[in-house]
Image (cartoon, rainbow, N blue to C red):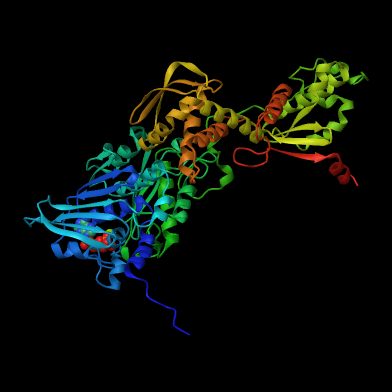
Length: 622
Ligand code: ADP
Ligand code: MG
């Protein structure tokens, strides 16, 4: 038998290795920006075309390279940043693997121009798929410019795998944010297809955060400062009332390197405990400084995870300093000492006024009357909660009592009334309208129950309404003729620049649903019309939900902005669980659901209703 193992040709090995470093244009952006920072530049320019698919270029004013270094920089494992394995444990640079330029050169067309401060002339090198095409002496400013063109030109499969420009640009913007936030003392500019997205001067940290996330961010920042032997913390957390549905504004930097750490994130959540509404996340921009010897950065190929020697201590310090800051700024109800949770008032109760308990007396109750319906009076006597209880014929209803939600008393009252209404109308009247009012009822303010010829139908009110709204929005967006209602006063809303970008991308589709934008600026949008039926008070919520959905969605190949928009708006506007519906509303919802094209599932593909046949029910009684 012949031997079967052979060494891979260099260019194949290079391409495989490159795949680990470069997944998408944003990876190139990250590597080039980091190289510029390691070169001690204090002005860095990022230029992108077609979301990086055509061009990613980074120009810095750093220390440049000699002719030999310029050539060597493209070799694999060629680095000026570490010399021995020990150096790995005292890293002061972003890079150290010496792989980035080699990887990028394996899968793109690269043009490097570089000059050191004391050299008269610089060097230009062109490389295509790891092959050097040209090298010359040129006149060029001090510093380095690396232009990466036609990424993945020689790996069509990977090129096809890239997402839409919108998505790729978002990844690039994320990387840019991370690097720019970690280095406020460096000036950054960022251009996409010729237009300027960011122009950040050298500034302090607060100014940097505000420049990136919009001027309204300023008022929401609470400083966090702490210095202990093992850890220095500086930065900001966002006030709880400005918390967001997205996790977009959560940043940890360790020794000026962006990291992801679910564990440390938990420390922040713990500090915010009781201050945030359900589903909302705290914003934070925190710089942690630790001895490089106590961390291991080598754990992850793209280096956003690191290992700490003593995570528990960091957790404790972080949690208590954030808590302390929130307390100092009068935000937290309880300060830094140990406390029992049950004494804390939940934040959502902050503005609520205490309610005096009342005793309800049924004034019309007559123990000598034997006909209960007389005392119950007309069917719409909403306030007569107790009359329900006094009705001796209503015994069967007690079956339901235990099922009622105990949390919302107001709604509980209404629910009682609903039952009573049905019962009363049934016994007193017998005209046709009563017949229909009997066909549905609401269970636990969550389900609508209706009878079928063959059994019973249970509809999830929230999902059903999402389906109805989703199909209607989608129709409006596609046929482009929704009606809008004009607002009396234009509504001005502020967002972070990248949030504005998301809204501008969807502007046209939003307009087809009925939104009218009079102005979209860098940080504010002005709305003069909203879709018919959308309350003005919901507009912010809709747009925030939309931004969060776009951010969290990992759009696939058949990603459609219209679909996402329709889903998101349906989610924001659909009837919620816990909302009481009267009979007409219940029936209207049932009818609209079954008029849909796909009534069976919600927009996120979950069942909208279940049925139970008489057989099923009979089996249960066996
Ligand atoms: P690493 O950053 O891990 O060392 P790279 O492949 O990114 O590996 O870069 C290889 C080497 O090229 C670096 O160690 C550095 O000496 C040099 N280099 C890369 N980019 C620049 C730049 N913008 N300015 C100066 N030198 C650079
Ligand atoms: Mg590098």
